[in-house]
Image 1 (cartoon, one colour):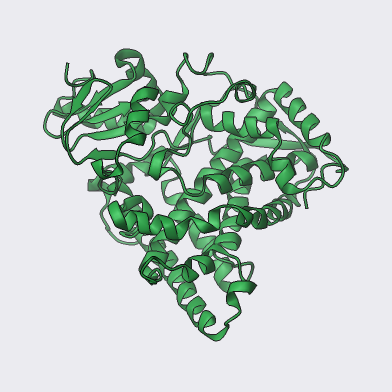
Image 2 (image 1 turned 30 degrees about the horizontal axis):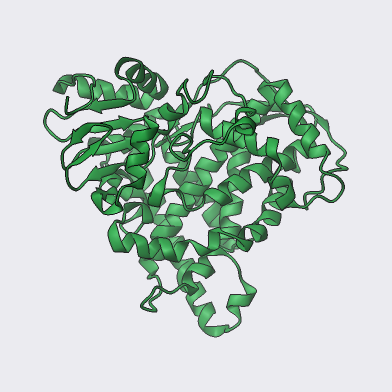
Length: 463
């Protein structure tokens, strides 16, 4: 056998398959995994097939292979309309390596420590209005926290007209694909038609242009500021400034277009996804009382004056975040790899043009790796170390999410700040399932909690 098994896809059924992927994504993936195993072929009759891969050994072969074997930018072209041509996600070869080298420094080491206090303070600011007995729609609050972190840590904007404009326009832009129905515009090019400002695609394009202009205005203003202030490097530590100061091996800086597209990538990757992860984590913590009890015990045992980075290293808090991203990963698959030449993987021979999709969701649902995979059990991450081919919420290899360390730290510090200040309860404790939100799996938008008690915070001290 040269190719894995998969569903037959005569032309008239393809649209129904796509609609099921959009509106019932978990059922779509679970059903195919039960029928065809951990290597699933989709399509291939008229064009090279897509291969869902949830076999850890096969994923290892993909992640450890020469990156030059794959055209990842081509495989992720569905994002070009939102991110721009220069996004790291859409680049291959030397351009990808150059951009990744320029982007890496702000997301590691001491830079994370600098962001930790900011995250705690923003969380306290956003939740300050929470009062006992008041029902809270969780997602808008988590989005507000993650958006403020982006604007302040990435853009270096804390207040002012542009801060407010970006805050409002970005929120509006990202709501363009907030439901499964509106997400269909991403998958069907025939819906990407500008029929005027009242049409869905027309509204999106106009919102995108407004955000684009605001970002370019900030870049140009910052360049003028850099020319006038030789001490800017020491007075600013936001990511935009660091990127503008970065130079490649030839001594060349990033262009305005490159900066714009990378900022859009950071916004998309760091705002929506982290907000969804936070809503899920709060749901699971309060859906399962024993999880909440263990977390409170860990936080309370840290002692007076615990620093933010010490809190972020808490083993049970870390395990909760890991399990949150395991059971319902925000992105169902790692970035697509399109083969540039034939390749053998797991005994199958794949031709040039085959699109490989390492399936994060299906890998995380393997019974042989994660017993009772549908159950939320943070303890599994305290009992075992998983390989990067078994646990891959941020993708892998040279395409692993650049901001994964920042995202995980942000999740942990936001959760610790909220749990330390509030006693919460779900207004409805029935089980919930993910829904599609653009390219991501997200909690239902109507998930609500209620404050049952304000906690007098003695320990830990977050800020």
